Length: 173
Image 1 (cartoon, rainbow, N blue to C red):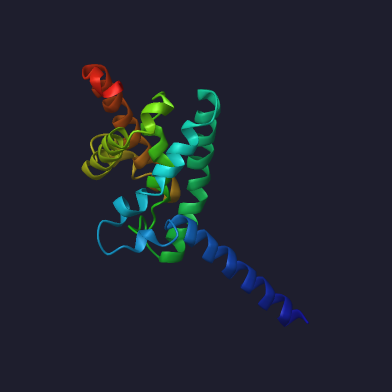
Image 2: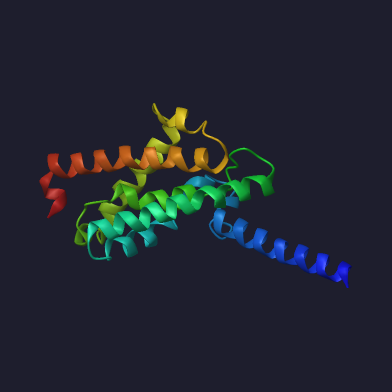
């Protein structure tokens, strides 16, 4: 009986670990042999659309914060399972941080493919380029470091996107 209980726990742990890894890798998109972070980040686009439809920016910010903070233990567990500090296969950080890029952008603009593309590209550019302090926050332990660099990159992208919309008002029409 005791052995069955242990086996049951291990199977349960294995299921939880598999589900955790599935979410952290963007349902496997993070295993893409070509640009896994960019491919995995695609899941952030429908998430961004959903977040933009939630009434009230405080609720939107709350949801984004919840997704990002949930990403810390999620990414930590996935990194442990993959046996690496910051595995490229983990893309939850890209997914959860992408809506930050579009904070305070009207939902009608987020429905426009060119605005989504500009924000998406900005997010990827800032994530890949690792401008200061992105490289510094990446050194935080485990999932905190995995999540933090993408959050900072998303904040940079958000500022630039707002700047572009201000500089080029025809983008906002």
